[in-house]
Length: 277
Ligand code: ATR
Image 1 (spheres, rainbow, N blue to C red):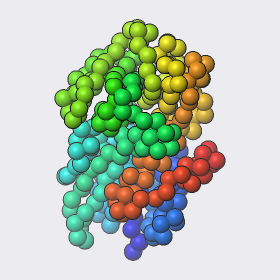
Image 2 (image 1 turned 180 degrees about the horizontal axis):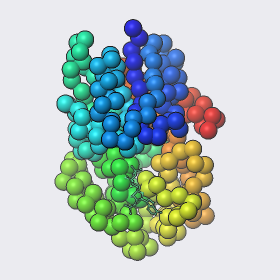
Image 3 (image 1 turned 120 degrees about the vertical axis):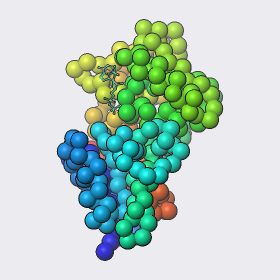
Image 4 (image 1 turned 90 degrees about the vertical axis):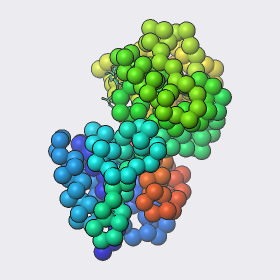
């Protein structure tokens, strides 16, 4: 039987993960299958158990199940524990695969995209993360570990930003994280501004242009939405803009490495996913 993997989420039809992992497998000559599975809300554990007991080797997990996936695991990486969320599960241990290892590759996916593909050094930079939900939680640890001069979080609901800043300042190995009230953002300026919110056209984000320092980068963690209102605003403010396609492929490459110990070349896959979108 070939090794079986899957991505589980709800909804899942939009997921590009099956084609990304199929491309990695082709590139490296690995034989595997990779399915997209939609789990009913509230039934993540049931669906994951069926897959694991049916012989599944590993699983990617997407919204809204990353917290449940972490809770379902029996072992975890430090980066998954810091995030309190998992996007990658690895089923180990003989025929029964009795252990469930949780990892989180979102943060390293973002940082690798910024460093490797967009050639942005993070050390010594002032970074603003917009949003205080699950997507933000997955990347704060990796951003803090990259040794920025400042890491700040701003969110529409300030209390969430304040809680995250406090929690992560206690959890990460270096630096402290600042929570900024949205109405105070015009007093700050950043080299990298990352949007992790789900704000869309109907209620776009309001960020002062002064937040974008000269030569700054505006990064939207979403993909497949083209030039989002956030990126439009950033472009008008003079920032270089980037969407989340690179992060999507880089987090997948890290998951592939966790499962199979081999690192795919992400560049051709980013190019083909971008063309397909
Ligand atoms: P995800 O898992 O994608 O992070 P989430 O946990 O529901 O999803 O979080 C969505 C994030 O987008 C939140 O930070 C939310 O702000 P609130 O905490 O105030 O709800 C943010 N968000 C969604 N729509 C927004 C909007 N129109 N303007 C600003 N922030 C928005």
